[in-house]
Length: 223
Image 1 (cartoon, helix red, strand yellow):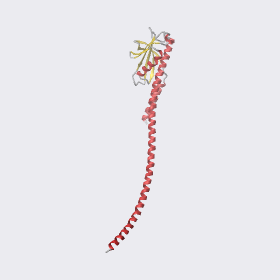
Image 2 (spheres, rainbow, N blue to C red; image 1 turned 135 degrees about the horizontal axis):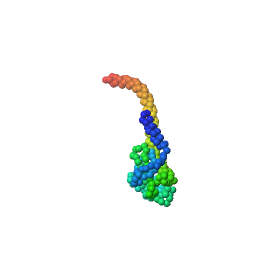
Image 3 (cartoon, rainbow, N blue to C red; image 1 turned 90 degrees about the vertical axis):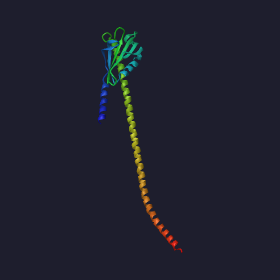
Image 4 (spheres, rainbow, N blue to C red; image 1 turned 120 degrees about the vertical axis):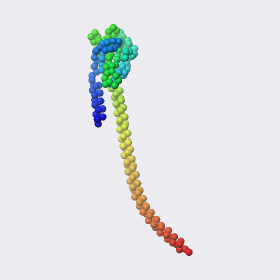
Protein backbone atom coordinates (compact mmCIF):
# COMPACT_ATOMS: atom_id res chain seq x y z
CA UNK A 1 0.00 0.00 0.00
CA UNK A 2 2.86 2.38 0.89
CA UNK A 3 4.53 1.69 -2.48
CA UNK A 4 1.30 2.45 -4.38
CA UNK A 5 0.81 5.67 -2.40
CA UNK A 6 4.41 6.76 -3.10
CA UNK A 7 3.97 6.10 -6.83
CA UNK A 8 0.68 7.98 -6.89
CA UNK A 9 2.30 10.91 -5.07
CA UNK A 10 5.20 10.99 -7.56
CA UNK A 11 2.75 10.98 -10.48
CA UNK A 12 0.74 13.74 -8.81
CA UNK A 13 3.86 15.89 -8.36
CA UNK A 14 4.84 15.26 -11.99
CA UNK A 15 1.41 16.28 -13.24
CA UNK A 16 1.55 19.45 -11.16
CA UNK A 17 4.87 20.36 -12.77
CA UNK A 18 3.55 19.79 -16.26
CA UNK A 19 0.41 21.75 -15.40
CA UNK A 20 2.47 24.91 -14.99
CA UNK A 21 1.95 27.30 -17.85
CA UNK A 22 5.07 27.58 -19.96
CA UNK A 23 6.38 31.12 -19.89
CA UNK A 24 9.16 32.77 -21.87
CA UNK A 25 11.30 35.34 -20.09
CA UNK A 26 13.94 37.77 -21.26
CA UNK A 27 17.39 37.72 -19.73
CA UNK A 28 21.14 37.99 -20.21
CA UNK A 29 22.77 34.59 -20.72
CA UNK A 30 26.14 33.29 -21.77
CA UNK A 31 25.42 32.29 -25.33
CA UNK A 32 26.52 33.27 -28.82
CA UNK A 33 30.05 34.06 -27.77
CA UNK A 34 29.29 36.25 -24.75
CA UNK A 35 26.67 37.52 -22.33
CA UNK A 36 23.86 38.34 -24.72
CA UNK A 37 20.19 39.15 -24.58
CA UNK A 38 18.18 35.93 -24.74
CA UNK A 39 14.79 34.34 -24.37
CA UNK A 40 14.67 31.85 -21.54
CA UNK A 41 12.08 29.12 -20.97
CA UNK A 42 11.66 26.19 -18.59
CA UNK A 43 11.12 22.72 -20.07
CA UNK A 44 9.54 19.98 -17.95
CA UNK A 45 10.57 16.34 -18.08
CA UNK A 46 12.94 16.89 -21.02
CA UNK A 47 16.60 15.89 -20.94
CA UNK A 48 19.14 18.47 -22.18
CA UNK A 49 20.14 16.30 -25.16
CA UNK A 50 16.51 15.68 -26.15
CA UNK A 51 15.76 19.39 -25.80
CA UNK A 52 18.58 20.38 -28.11
CA UNK A 53 17.68 17.69 -30.63
CA UNK A 54 14.07 18.87 -30.55
CA UNK A 55 15.27 22.48 -31.05
CA UNK A 56 17.42 21.43 -34.00
CA UNK A 57 14.42 19.70 -35.58
CA UNK A 58 12.03 22.56 -34.79
CA UNK A 59 14.31 25.08 -36.49
CA UNK A 60 14.30 23.23 -39.82
CA UNK A 61 11.29 25.33 -40.86
CA UNK A 62 13.50 28.43 -40.89
CA UNK A 63 16.17 26.93 -43.12
CA UNK A 64 19.75 27.83 -42.27
CA UNK A 65 22.63 25.51 -41.54
CA UNK A 66 22.20 23.64 -38.25
CA UNK A 67 25.25 22.57 -36.26
CA UNK A 68 26.56 22.08 -32.72
CA UNK A 69 28.48 25.00 -31.26
CA UNK A 70 29.66 26.08 -27.81
CA UNK A 71 27.74 23.29 -26.09
CA UNK A 72 24.48 24.04 -27.88
CA UNK A 73 22.81 24.33 -31.26
CA UNK A 74 23.71 26.99 -33.82
CA UNK A 75 21.45 27.91 -36.75
CA UNK A 76 23.46 29.88 -39.30
CA UNK A 77 21.64 32.22 -41.69
CA UNK A 78 18.08 31.31 -40.72
CA UNK A 79 15.18 33.04 -42.46
CA UNK A 80 12.36 34.44 -40.31
CA UNK A 81 10.87 37.24 -42.41
CA UNK A 82 8.50 38.33 -39.64
CA UNK A 83 11.58 39.21 -37.56
CA UNK A 84 14.24 40.35 -40.03
CA UNK A 85 12.52 40.63 -43.39
CA UNK A 86 14.74 39.36 -46.20
CA UNK A 87 17.83 39.42 -44.01
CA UNK A 88 19.04 36.21 -42.47
CA UNK A 89 19.69 35.84 -38.74
CA UNK A 90 21.79 33.53 -36.58
CA UNK A 91 20.04 31.64 -33.82
CA UNK A 92 21.62 30.01 -30.78
CA UNK A 93 19.93 27.44 -28.56
CA UNK A 94 21.32 25.87 -25.40
CA UNK A 95 19.94 23.59 -22.69
CA UNK A 96 21.03 24.16 -19.10
CA UNK A 97 20.58 21.24 -16.74
CA UNK A 98 21.38 17.57 -16.49
CA UNK A 99 19.72 14.29 -17.39
CA UNK A 100 17.18 13.26 -14.78
CA UNK A 101 16.25 16.81 -13.73
CA UNK A 102 12.51 17.37 -13.43
CA UNK A 103 12.96 20.62 -15.31
CA UNK A 104 15.70 22.32 -17.29
CA UNK A 105 16.30 25.79 -18.66
CA UNK A 106 16.49 26.41 -22.39
CA UNK A 107 18.05 29.57 -23.73
CA UNK A 108 17.51 30.96 -27.23
CA UNK A 109 19.29 34.02 -28.65
CA UNK A 110 18.62 35.73 -31.98
CA UNK A 111 21.61 37.51 -33.52
CA UNK A 112 20.26 40.07 -35.96
CA UNK A 113 23.74 41.01 -37.12
CA UNK A 114 25.33 43.59 -34.89
CA UNK A 115 22.73 43.27 -32.14
CA UNK A 116 20.93 40.51 -30.31
CA UNK A 117 17.15 40.65 -30.31
CA UNK A 118 15.73 42.41 -27.23
CA UNK A 119 12.38 43.82 -26.18
CA UNK A 120 13.64 47.38 -25.73
CA UNK A 121 14.95 47.88 -29.26
CA UNK A 122 12.86 45.35 -31.17
CA UNK A 123 9.49 45.26 -29.43
CA UNK A 124 7.40 43.77 -32.27
CA UNK A 125 10.06 41.33 -33.43
CA UNK A 126 10.70 40.25 -29.84
CA UNK A 127 7.03 39.29 -29.42
CA UNK A 128 7.27 37.11 -32.53
CA UNK A 129 10.45 35.48 -31.25
CA UNK A 130 8.77 34.95 -27.89
CA UNK A 131 5.91 33.09 -29.62
CA UNK A 132 8.40 30.97 -31.56
CA UNK A 133 10.30 29.98 -28.43
CA UNK A 134 7.07 29.19 -26.58
CA UNK A 135 5.85 27.07 -29.49
CA UNK A 136 9.12 25.14 -29.36
CA UNK A 137 8.93 24.73 -25.57
CA UNK A 138 5.35 23.46 -25.68
CA UNK A 139 6.22 21.04 -28.48
CA UNK A 140 9.32 19.71 -26.68
CA UNK A 141 7.45 19.28 -23.40
CA UNK A 142 4.53 17.53 -25.10
CA UNK A 143 6.93 15.20 -26.89
CA UNK A 144 8.50 14.30 -23.55
CA UNK A 145 5.10 13.67 -21.97
CA UNK A 146 4.00 11.60 -24.98
CA UNK A 147 7.14 9.47 -24.65
CA UNK A 148 6.45 9.05 -20.93
CA UNK A 149 2.83 8.20 -21.70
CA UNK A 150 3.89 5.57 -24.23
CA UNK A 151 6.20 3.95 -21.67
CA UNK A 152 3.46 4.04 -19.02
CA UNK A 153 0.92 2.54 -21.43
CA UNK A 154 3.32 -0.29 -22.28
CA UNK A 155 3.80 -0.96 -18.58
CA UNK A 156 0.02 -0.96 -18.12
CA UNK A 157 -0.43 -3.34 -21.06
CA UNK A 158 2.21 -5.65 -19.54
CA UNK A 159 0.38 -5.64 -16.20
CA UNK A 160 -2.94 -6.29 -17.94
CA UNK A 161 -1.38 -9.20 -19.87
CA UNK A 162 -0.04 -10.57 -16.58
CA UNK A 163 -3.51 -10.26 -15.07
CA UNK A 164 -5.07 -12.09 -18.04
CA UNK A 165 -2.49 -14.87 -17.63
CA UNK A 166 -3.32 -15.13 -13.94
CA UNK A 167 -7.05 -15.33 -14.70
CA UNK A 168 -6.39 -18.02 -17.31
CA UNK A 169 -4.17 -19.95 -14.88
CA UNK A 170 -6.94 -19.81 -12.26
CA UNK A 171 -9.47 -21.10 -14.78
CA UNK A 172 -7.13 -23.93 -15.74
CA UNK A 173 -6.54 -24.81 -12.09
CA UNK A 174 -10.27 -24.76 -11.40
CA UNK A 175 -10.74 -27.03 -14.41
CA UNK A 176 -8.06 -29.34 -13.03
CA UNK A 177 -9.89 -29.46 -9.68
CA UNK A 178 -13.12 -30.46 -11.44
CA UNK A 179 -11.25 -33.15 -13.37
CA UNK A 180 -9.55 -34.39 -10.21
CA UNK A 181 -12.87 -34.47 -8.32
CA UNK A 182 -14.46 -36.42 -11.17
CA UNK A 183 -11.55 -38.85 -11.16
CA UNK A 184 -11.68 -39.15 -7.36
CA UNK A 185 -15.44 -39.85 -7.44
CA UNK A 186 -14.93 -42.46 -10.16
CA UNK A 187 -12.03 -44.00 -8.23
CA UNK A 188 -14.11 -44.12 -5.03
CA UNK A 189 -16.93 -45.83 -6.94
CA UNK A 190 -14.44 -48.23 -8.54
CA UNK A 191 -12.99 -49.04 -5.11
CA UNK A 192 -16.47 -49.76 -3.72
CA UNK A 193 -17.23 -51.95 -6.71
CA UNK A 194 -13.86 -53.65 -6.35
CA UNK A 195 -14.58 -54.49 -2.70
CA UNK A 196 -17.91 -56.06 -3.64
CA UNK A 197 -16.29 -58.04 -6.43
CA UNK A 198 -13.52 -59.17 -4.03
CA UNK A 199 -16.13 -60.47 -1.57
CA UNK A 200 -17.97 -62.22 -4.38
CA UNK A 201 -14.75 -63.68 -5.67
CA UNK A 202 -13.83 -64.94 -2.18
CA UNK A 203 -17.14 -66.78 -2.03
CA UNK A 204 -16.51 -68.27 -5.47
CA UNK A 205 -13.02 -69.35 -4.36
CA UNK A 206 -14.38 -71.05 -1.22
CA UNK A 207 -16.99 -72.86 -3.27
CA UNK A 208 -14.36 -73.89 -5.81
CA UNK A 209 -12.09 -75.15 -3.00
CA UNK A 210 -14.87 -77.50 -1.93
CA UNK A 211 -15.21 -78.75 -5.49
CA UNK A 212 -11.46 -79.34 -5.62
CA UNK A 213 -11.52 -81.15 -2.25
CA UNK A 214 -14.39 -83.33 -3.40
CA UNK A 215 -12.61 -84.30 -6.59
CA UNK A 216 -9.37 -84.87 -4.69
CA UNK A 217 -11.21 -87.21 -2.27
CA UNK A 218 -12.62 -89.13 -5.23
CA UNK A 219 -9.10 -89.44 -6.60
CA UNK A 220 -7.73 -90.81 -3.36
CA UNK A 221 -10.59 -93.27 -3.06
CA UNK A 222 -9.53 -95.05 -6.19
CA UNK A 223 -7.37 -98.14 -5.32
